[in-house]
Image (cartoon, helix red, strand yellow):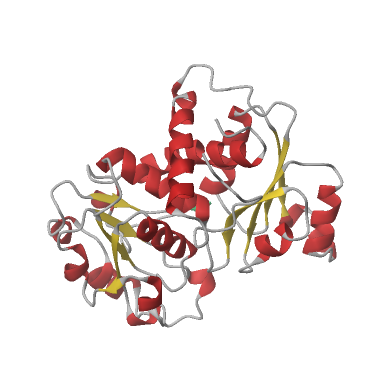
Length: 308
Ligand code: CP
């Protein structure tokens, strides 16, 4: 497997071969999480620090579980209980943690580019666990892993991404990764939530949800990113659900084997009705399980676990 980078900062600059290589490596780790003893000695003696400057459930917990399953020493840092509350800068924080010799830093931050800033100033490998509206590369990897596991391929699939595309780092990483691997991507959402230049991303825009769902193999509903909006992007949750929510009726327009995904957390009854979120086409909890598998592969690869 060829991966010619110190860090994993996004999907935009990876090749299709590099993305496929990480997914293939992850296949080898899937079995570890299903064994009675869920641990391998691959990263014994390595330290990984998880620096979360924004809230997280899935990403933070799955990174920690992945690191522990690889026998790495996993250390968690949350900004609210750290010296950042006393005014310490991001760079000073990172330099102090670097002095303790970690192999990998996993960083989530509200500022787009924060992990890139850190990566350029530390010898440790850096994984972007979500930066502002920019990218969330391990979410894209786990989404691709889930699609490949369920549908057997990525190339040629019709993938529709519905909702708050403009503010979504998940959408941006998914679009880059899916397009590189040959999927056809459509986006759909309120006009205020469509990025200004969608052609530059290589996607088509569907004006109505029916057009987006028609013949789709994969439907990815996005969370409305209230924390990144200035309000007033749509009239009400009820209107949103009516025009852009996925329900059992409009889901009938998709292909017969179509799967429904959501990165979480879900606004139930808004982005997805509960009977879709918990229904037979939903692979949302498969995505969560894949998160551990894919993050094991990423941390293993960057911590010097070797290419095999
Ligand atoms: N998908 C995702 O990033 O979820 P969390 O914010 O809970 O980590």
